Length: 167
Image 1 (tube, rainbow, N blue to C red):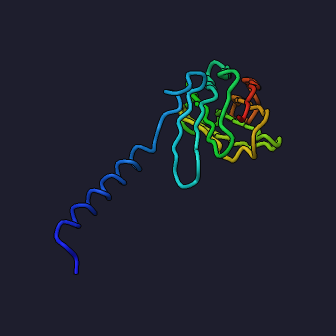
Image 2 (image 1 turned 90 degrees about the horizontal axis):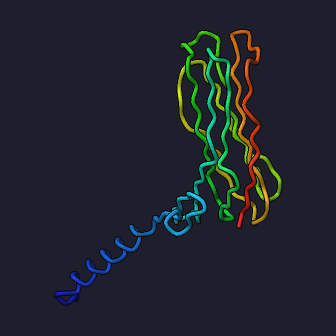
Image 3 (image 1 turned 180 degrees about the horizontal axis):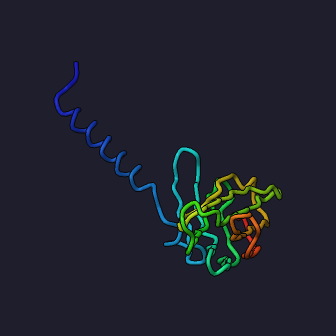
């Protein structure tokens, strides 16, 4: 038979566990001003997110530009890498469009690539997520282009190639 008062201790233990789990999400940017990385300590291990740069195109102006953030250091393990894109002066489904590509290599030299094709004025973020396969030197690449309705390339931005170190 249970004694009275033990339920209060159980509720207190559950509350303390909830508080300690809730405090598990931290921002690595607070601890390391070198790289804006957010870390989430969950069941799959450390998951870091690093922004690598931006890409922009102008359909009417026939311009394409990329801007990387320079050298980046990321923790070894599971990571997400992002880049923003923006396409201006393009009407919906007029045949004119743009392509944005983000490639990040892991520590073993394997490329992880994502590509976004658009046919209208828009902006957003593309990303790749993978395990770094240990620590070591790697790199990332940003590339974009704008094309006309015959898919003739009108302008190319990049490639911008940046240094990436998994530590």
